[in-house]
Image (cartoon, rainbow over all chains, first blue to last red; front, side, top):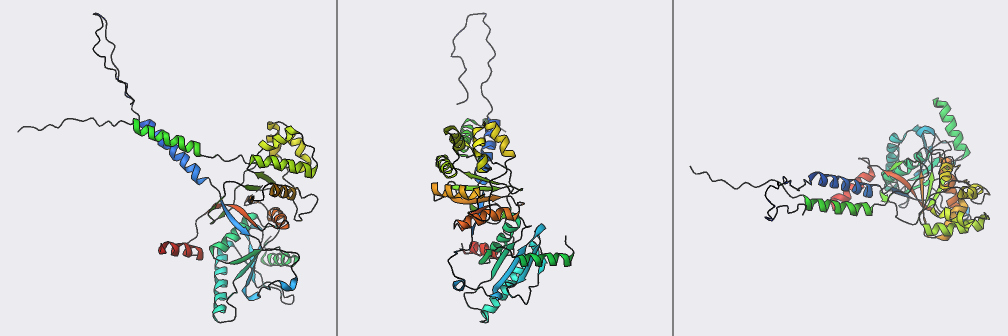
Length: 193
Length: 220
């Protein structure tokens, strides 16, 4: 296809007319094929890999008309409250910290070590379910409370951690002033600035 | 001993056919590639193991950069036309026909309504320059706050297309309060389901999710 028939069909030129040297018109197409496939590879990668991935999130439904007593009360024994603070610091405590006489004891950690905390919590809830201390419908619930110094990356990291550890129930909740105070106290106590 | 001589064959293969195929495929991929729309700011999204792909169309993209500036974009041009009409009447901006047309072809917005008329009236070069120093769309945790421009954008966009999916593309270093403003505004409109755009990372081994995926594979 790429070559042409260049052999002259025996047409005699006059005597003394020199024949030009015949050059082959065959072109080696190998480099061109190489280039073609290289570009194909590039375009294939850019089309399939450029699709951004998303994380779907469902926020808890809030209805201002819903009365306080109609809401389901979360059992303190299944709850784990996580406070996200600056520089990726994570503070957590068991329960929901609603007892004013007994302030929760904050423990500091980072994301890597936090996985074990969740796993332990889920295990203890599963044990309590097995022993009948909790109902069948009770699930480990993680309350994520990012404070004002935390970043969006911290939040996504924590939400991702919920998926990784298969926590079924979790929610993003506004941090309270009291909890902000707890973080401050813990930071002062541990010498974090 | 008589030597059986095989006829020598050339080792050259005609590459023409292969070349044709290569370029045919190349043309296909080039035409099928949809290039990324221009982005107002560079955003490096945080990583997650979530692998749900972003829907192709009908998305409202709210971009948040490291400084917490919010940018608003929707993809469909026809919808942009309806949207600016709606914004124009809602906010009484008195936009001219040319300014509305400028909005239709623009990619994203990151300025308060008070600056919108001046921005759309300027040349594309000036718009580009203005985008670099854009203050971002003002937002607030209360939907009905008078300075919550973002709420007006969201409401108008949802009115033009109720099936619009809301995607938040925020930088990992963006502070939580700036993202919280968006989440609270959405909650104010009773939008509790939305997407966060993240980068894909592998599931760490030894975790519940990892075990889940693997047991599913074994069953197959």
